[in-house]
Image (cartoon, rainbow, N blue to C red; front, side):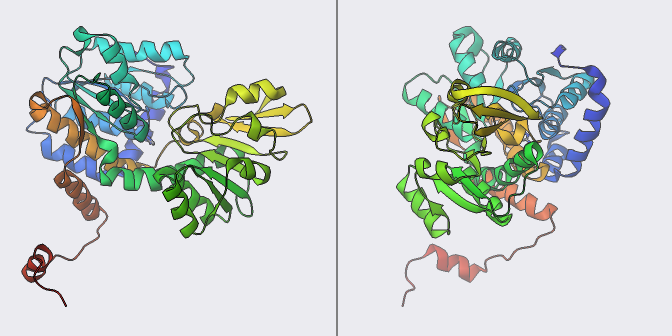
Length: 417
Ligand code: ADE
């Protein structure tokens, strides 16, 4: 066992956080219990590149309980919770990561998990999978397959497969309905607002809140901002998504127009250069800029650095940039995911379903992965249903069941007007 974390002395605080998260993650708890005797991941090495949070720690413990040996790195330089990493290290987990590591150290941490010679990988953003492939055939020798947690990662892996470069099967956990329809919408919605509030403590009510991107994440943030009293504006490039935003009651306009009126900006597009110098030049004094997309490419921090004449950290995760004409723009969390860098990521109750899907997908790959061709696979309908059923049970919600007559009606075409 090896590790590299910031400070092992933080382990007790991390342990308490993990215990708290465990009480909120009953689906994963039940699955862990179900497989604890059988140990379907016995003799399986899992390497993961995931935000090192209290929820991730609950997943790590569940995987260990069903037999896996694991090694972990963080998937973002600002998202590692140092106390949680310390608690994991103290428990004997191979964990490499600390908050505010350099890009060089970031890849050093990933490399340690590649040297662990994984059978299975668990990725969030596809950096681990890509790095494994770049290192060539010997690194991939033992790999049965892997999973991917996020939209950006799934896009990258699909592109990789289309170019013929992907050499193992990957299950797109992101695309499970019990993942994206909850984590991306409600998780990102709440945690992004949480990040903005922790970094600024500003009032949202009455503000013009600009959301770039009306995918599942952008929609989640837009709904939560509106719920807090903001006048929410959406910027989109996709006509269908833009139309949906209009029908849901949001104002839709190009970023060049929104730039002039917005008080708070957040990007959730998965694309680069969404807010650049040309927009910053138009913004009001005091505008707050943030991003909740996976990579720090959506707000051009380079442009902001270039046009600013002065810069100072005014609060944790909040840097004030003063422009030539005296206007001040405030950049949160260096343009990295504001929900994980300035807050604690999605709430445990949401990660419960996402990580239940990760857990079941890894067990599936251990059983079936060797017979699967390279490619990006969806989670099965059965798994999605199972996670939803357990979640409903754990929150005490009962639902109706179809009668045999209704089932027959739904599967036949004969009954009409
Ligand atoms: N992604 C978003 N929120 C997260 C969390 N709490 N833990 C791990 N990954 C996350």
